[in-house]
Length: 375
Image 1: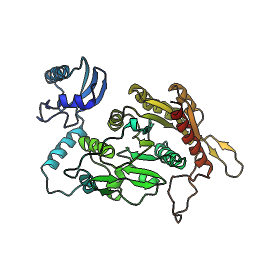
Image 2 (image 1 turned 135 degrees about the horizontal axis):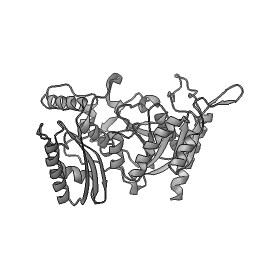
Image 3 (image 1 turned 30 degrees about the horizontal axis):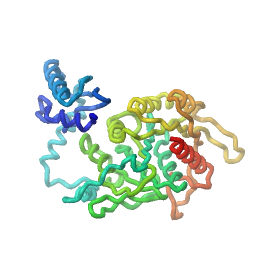
């Protein structure tokens, strides 16, 4: 069966005409979708030239035909200014062997210690259920839902792993109150455990909240290391906090884990739900099951009188669930955990089990477990 890796291997010899470097290594073959014997992809070119594109297209089609691909759809677009700058930056990095290692590179390098076998990617046949948490846009509380669902599943006695796959907007370590970093044991990276959840995040490898300026292959390598080089042990559930939207990182995750299910997070606002539908459509187009929709910030409840104020509108979550032919798992009100920094289990964003919102997350966890029990 054809895979993204097979396609990339077939296309690796094809060089960008001006740069004379592999399009695959440049990460300039984008948006790749592989289904049976059909392949769809986008090619980024330094210069948009009809004759150059024609020659490139013919070479791509010839190589893919040799690899057993019967139908190919190819789109071309010119490189953006940022993509052009990235190429220059990569060339400088390759020639700068004396430069300081990126933060966390030592831990990642130890995970590739010579002579040690790679750990196998987690296998769903071993009983691991992969659940990706997605949203159409940022700021809807997707990461909050992820960390609280992970903690709730752990409270139900499940063995839970969590990958913060939001590479540019990593926030899971801070949200869970994690202060330590992963260790390396005999070549394997050991995830940090908090609230019974094993956690890996780009945030462990960035100093002082610096922005992530990695691109292309380095991002793909980081995500793959989270699966391959981490000693997860036995798990029941693996949750992935995806980047918002339908960009390259989210698409890579979809292709790395074609057997995962998804939960879509939105607010009740009509526009937020409309945008979230794109993330849901991407899941369906890549053959991912949607477990349900979570409507976050559904209302504000007065602590004195209990009256509900629908400050962001009403009905967006239900309409989204109907559009995606799935169920509405929960409507979570606006709130903040009643935690104190002096408490040993303090975290800025994880709700206690005995809180009202904590109980909602326990109910979501129970619904998720019930859905898998029915399969």
